[in-house]
Image 1: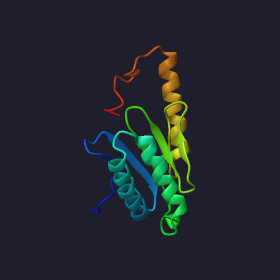
Image 2: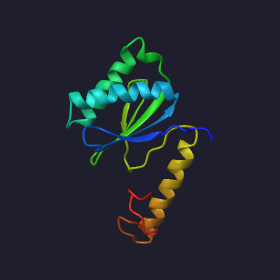
Image 3: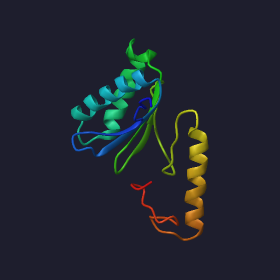
Image 4: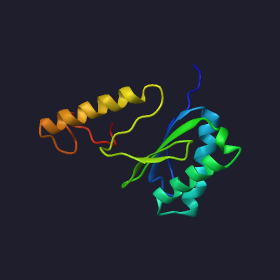
Length: 133
């Protein structure tokens, strides 16, 4: 059985940040390493660390060639970082990247809407918290 890459991982000094990627694995690992360095530089400012990474990604001749997308979140932010220098925040708490990203976003939004219509709390109709999902 072949090994698979873990595309979602905890980063930061205490593992308080979750990061995921789509695209070329080696490129994404390079970007995640750079992001971890930015988080060390700005330990309590995830948004600032992500903006700094996006700026470097867009401006640096080597980094500009990297082909990946990142999703990064902590307790207060859910961000998508692109190679064009964009740091995108979500309006509804749902994001998706990669080849199936739009399908995942549509399914998640439908689930959120169904739970809201049913008057379910934070754990939703399925009885699972976000951590369990």
